[in-house]
Structures are given as C-alpha cells and as structure tokens.
Image (cartoon, rainbow, N blue to C red):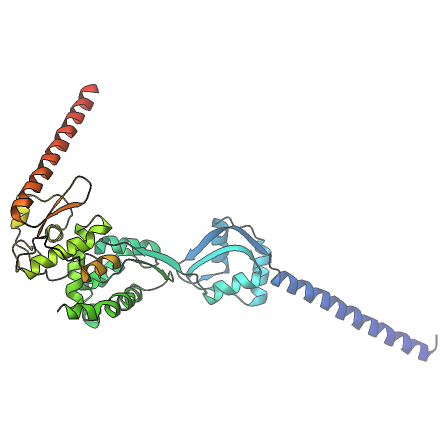
Amino acid sequence: MNLKQSLSFTRSDFITGILVFVLIFIVSFGSRQLRLSSSNSIIIDTEIDLRYSGNINLSGLTTILDSLKIDYDRDELNWSARILGWRTFKEGSYTLEGDYSYDLILSKLARGIQDPVPVVILPGINNIRFSETVGNQLSATSDEILAMFTDSVFLNELKLGSEDLFGRMLPETYLVYWTTTPKDFLRRILKEFEEKVVDEFTDTAQEEGLTINEVLIMASIVEWEAFMEEEKPIISGLYWNRINNRMRLQADPTINFALGERRRLLFEDYQLVHPYNTYLKRGLPPGPITNPSLSTIRATVYPQEHDYIYMVANPEGGHVFTRTFVEHQIESEKWRKWLREQYRIKRQRDSEEASSQ
C-alpha cells in the first residue's frame, strides 16, 4: 500500500467515524427527546390532588408521588429533571389525571401552574364555621382566617366592622388557588358582593330610603328566620311592616345571635341586655347576624306587600302569618298545643324504650 492509498484509507475511516458518531448522536438525542416529550411517560388513571406546602426539591416530589401510589419510573424521572433543569417545585395544589410527558408534569410543578380549588360558602353560618370551611380547602389555617374578622388594620382598610364584614361573605362556590391568602380570599368575596349586591340593589334600596348595610342587616335576620325559600319575601315584608309601624322588630334570631347559639328560646332569654336584643331595642340591630344568601337579599329588597305583623311556627317547618294580635294568639296556642303533644309522644316513647331494656 503506497502513501497515497494509505492517506486515502485514513481519510475514509475518519469520515466514516464522523458519520457513525453523528448517527449515534442523532439516534441518542432523538431517543432522549422522545423519552422527555413522550405523552405517556406518566399515566394517572384517576384524578388526584397533588398538594404540598412550601417549595420542595426532587426528592420531596418523588416521596409525594410514591405516597399517592402514582406509577412512574423514578430513575427516568430523576434523569429527566436533571436534563430539563427542574430542581425546585413550587408549593400549591395540582389536579392530575391522564397522560403526561416528563416535561409537561415537571414544568407545571416547577412553574407553580396550580389548578383552582372550589370553596363552598353556605348561607346562615357564623364566622367560626366559615373559617373552618375555608381552612379545610385552602393552605391557610382556620385560625388565620378567623383572625381576619378581628384584625383592626384590615377592618380599618375596608372601613367595615367585624359583623359587617362577615355579613358580606356572600354564599357562593368560589374557585381560587389553594395558596390564596386569607386577606385575598376575603377580598375576592367582597368583590363578588360588590358586583352582585351593591351594583345590583343600591338604586332600589335608596328609593326606599335604605342603605345596603340596612338591607344586609334585615336580610341576615330573614336568613335565620325563613326555612322555606318561598317564605322569604313574606317574612321580609312582615319585618319591614313592623319597622314602618314603629314597632320593635322582636326578631328571635337576634336573641340567638346575642346568646351565641341557635336554640329554642326561654322566657328569660328575651330579657337579655344586649345591643342585638330587638325585643328591648328599637330599629335594626347594629350589624348583620349572619351571611345571607343572594336570594334572601333579593327578597329583602323586594318584599311581598301585605298587612302581616305577626307570625308563628307551624308543624310543617314554615310559619302562619297573621294581621292582628288576637289572630296571633289563636295560632300561637295551636303551635303550643302541637309542641305539648310532641313532648308527650317523646316521653312515652322514651319510657317504653327504658322499660324494654
């Protein structure tokens, strides 16, 4: 083999080597990219909530994935995270279901792209139950949320009292991020209140010589008094009739609020000296006693027109409405008679159960 042939052979081998290297690189790179971007690298058949407080590292993430019994290749996930550069994952709540590539799931967690969680606020509750409900759905604790209703700086910022703020906790299902702070969550509800109550009913209320706060106070009483949706405008009209006739409101729910519990009232309860005792104080109480629903607020703004002044409960869970005190006494006696009969039946049943043991 002469020098020319030797050089030609060497050059040929070099080019072949280069081509082989390039081919191997392309195959390796393509394989790696395929593994990174494959849409079924992690398959989650049933919807799960991946939720954690504080930022976590890769080791913390794999620990959580293992606890949720997610089927995945740990070595491959670790390799993918290193290649993609995702090493820290932001706190939050992430709803996962379906097929994911490593890039998709890791970037979602690393960037903190949370999925909103539903927080259901019920009507007619108190601030303790409200705080417990929200605390079970958000990262903030119930104590942190409850503290907002006595936070003087926050209340001064809003220009609201504690009861006024809670009365505006409009019942609704709110979609928010799990990491939403207590203040931001309350501001979100207040924004909803502004749009659905203040903007909607202010003009009508003013035509009746009322402020939104007065409407809210009355609606909170109607909320606790009315067990049937169809009775709300009737009860609202009855209470407004008392106000317009310069009568005391004499609303049992305000006594319940003053006592701090909802129960059947005793005679001495009505003598309680308290700003919210509408049997002793004239006019509306100082603030709302609960958070009324939108339908109750609407019924308060648009009460049914009638001459009813009195009402008493009936066995069906509603009320009997009357115009005169004499009519009221007759219906009240019917109610007391029914109650006595229920107590008699209960005592008899308890006695029979005791004797059979």
